[in-house]
Length: 333
Ligand code: GTP
Image 1 (cartoon, rainbow, N blue to C red):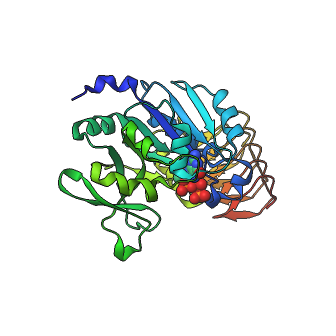
Image 2: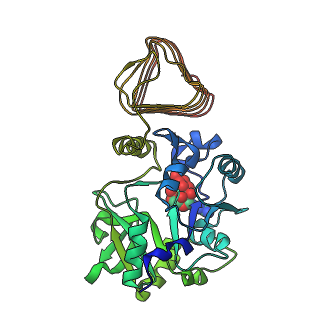
Image 3: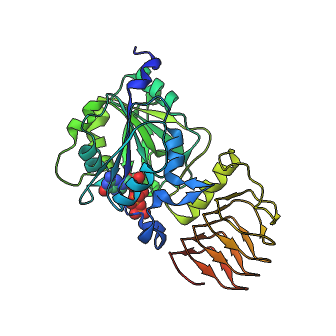
């Protein structure tokens, strides 16, 4: 068995090339991974999962690749980060193939929208003990419909994997949590030069080679929809990953609020779970709770924002109520 101390030779590949369609209209101008929750962009919460001793992190980018690249270059990370952009979307498998040259054996693979307490060092240790071709983190959920679902056998071997099944066809409630460890040889099985779904085209071929489950027992969420992004924010705050909490200077209420530099909120009030981006203004008498307000957004006096995602430079007019909405950059409500 290879000792876990050799974790330093491992690299991580992060898939970050999707369009984020379920978070439109915000994702027309801001890539999903740069939407801030609990005080920092989703991507940097994913980065927090990656052990400090990995050798390199490779981002397989596509949609808004240059925006992501610029952000990562100007915000420090514990390891070197390299981006490899796709000129057209290659899907999950195609993205892995395109960015996978020089990957370690094994390597971490992560989606860029997972929020979890899962421990990647434990995942790698389990992978090494099982000596299969891959070890996939699985989360237990009630509604399996949007996910890939695993059938589990002896020693948590994954016997079958069904992508987005009808509930009656789901073999269990354990779903692909969006991060895994794979043997380097897995990349050789992905056809080059075209779009490939790793889940639909490659995983079925890998099952006979031995794939194992790493069951998650604390929290997990996929932040890919507005509702799930707000739920993810609650989980992160609940886990102490949203900063010191409290409310901005001169404001009232409970918080926790994660406020970026330049926020002004004297006389405003806040319920729990709020992120305020740079230069957000919430005027006197306005109230915000369970929401994300991106940079430059302005909530005028006596307005209310509840359970909503507001893109950059949104304006909520005095006395208006915004509830359960996702508003794109520059919208006036
Ligand atoms: P939706 O459009 O709302 O479904 O979001 P998405 O585009 O992010 O798709 P999904 O959540 O299913 O993607 C899972 C992960 O794979 C995310 O981290 C995506 O960024 C990534 N991904 C999806 N498609 C591609 C692709 O074509 N290339 C690369 N490199 N990554 C992708």
